[in-house]
Structure formats: C-alpha cells, structure tokens
Image 1 (cartoon, one colour):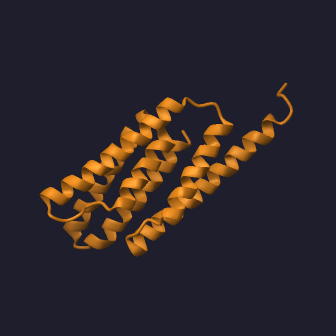
Image 2 (cartoon, helix red, strand yellow):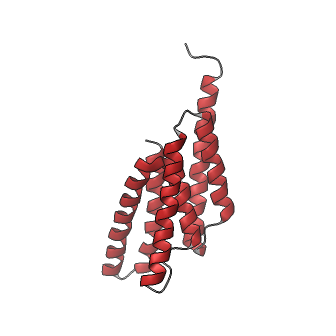
Image 3 (cartoon, helix red, strand yellow):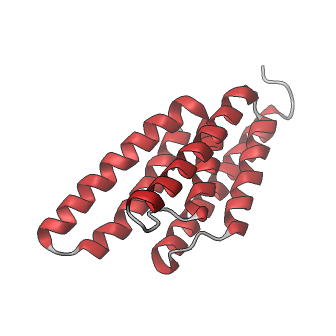
Length: 155
C-alpha cells in the first residue's frame, strides 16, 4: 500500500511536466515568429525542472553535468560559427536553451537528443533546399528539435 500523499505528489509532478511542455511550446513559437528566446520562459523552464528534480529522486551530478555540457556545446557553436562563417548561427538565447535542455535531460539523454535534433534539422534543411521552401523548413526544424527534447524527457 502506498504511503499517504505519494499519489498526490506524482500528480503534482505530472502537472509540472505538462506546464513544462506548454513552456517549451511557447519557446518554439517565439523562436519561430521572432527569432528570439525570451529569458523569462527559459528561467521558468529552469525553475519547473528544478521543482521536478526536488520532488523526485534524482542524481544531481548527472543533471548538472548535462547543463554544463549544454552550455559548453552551445558556446562552442556560438563562437565557432562567428569565426568561420562571420555570422552567428546561434544566439545567446540558443546557448542558454541548450543549457536548460542539458539540465532537463542529464548528460546521456542530452547527447542523444542533440544528435537526433541535428540529424532531423539537416534532413529538413535538405528537403527545403530541394523543393525551394527553405524558410518554412528552417522553422520546422527548430520545432522538431523541441518536440524531440520533450518526448525524450517523458521516456
């Protein structure tokens, strides 16, 4: 028999995860429409993820290493694209988002989702170039990346 209050806590965690999905959906919409990732939405995601981790048993070292990995990979992409392409492929908002996604998934899942999102975005970009609708497919690749991240969190 479950101790009293345990079921309520699981429902609360589920509600937090649903709020997190809505938050990531708004992030995707803002990125699609404005090419900006608002800090308030990223901070909200960070707070919700922290609440989920506090309420559930989790190894904080794995989570924090995932956040640092996301931050380092994001900064590398940010600075290397500025050097090699003389333009930014990533903004600082994208770097912060990668840190939040790394915090959400931990090191193991973050690397899988990063590779999966990159491959999906590449396929969409190639299809977009072939049929001549590049901008539409460029927007869709970001949305698919966020969707993959959310789905990986619930596994």
